[in-house]
Image (cartoon, rainbow, N blue to C red; front, side, top):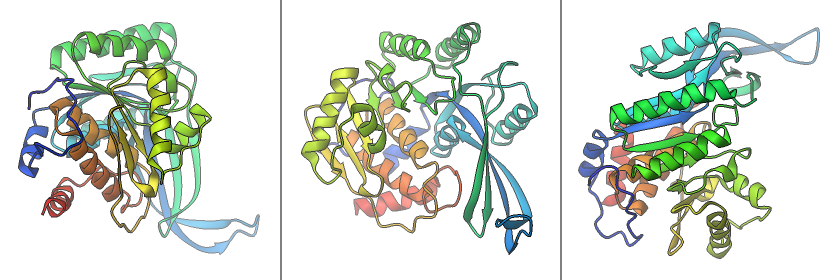
Length: 344
């Protein structure tokens, strides 16, 4: 179980790692996460009447809550699983940037890889909730790509962290907010491949086909359908195989992992494929589930664990976070219990 191997195991299930092996080995992994970060802000209250000014509910505000979101939530998941995250992103030089850095400090996450740019604002997504029901969301953001000067400084910072911290896997978390430009993605994947560092991406439409030669590509079914203009049936493996082949022809990726919402996940290494079904859940909120899935998958890549087992674990982890309202990292203890039951 040596970190930094690009060797991919078959889906046979042979050589299954035990629960103890998996969670102990996670503590040895350094993960570099690069992508769009944000603050997930929650305004929580109660609705008791309709406004006389317009036919809208009046929320009696009870609580304000700021949480780390986007790629920063991936960092929280990596930390919760026992590994060490190194978060790299670009934020503004505004009041929200101060709040963001303070949130990192509260969570004992380093801001070494966070670059401030006065020409940008820090992304904030504000949700208004009443009795766990989301009434409204408003976003503060700039989605243009970071400028060339900022990108060059940022890339130098990323490479320096990879070299100094002995990074075992690089994870791209793309929300189309401008941090991940095509040039940055291509340059960083090429660097990682030259240094035998596995890479994984949770893509969005803008840069969907920029992740050429990546190790693991993890889109959701909707993103795949829109990018390929082909609509695979999540109940039919052959249509998913066609989609995976189409992706591989464009990306030359090693593994394809397509999340299928309530249908589970589809895993393909271009020689074998399998659908991993979901477990029954009381779903409260699907926000952040993708962050959790990519976090577990990245750790599995870093350690060359049996990839089928890693997807099963990722599937469980994604389901667990869906039982909580809002964006939250996975509960490691609960994940261990559920995975143990699945092995029995």
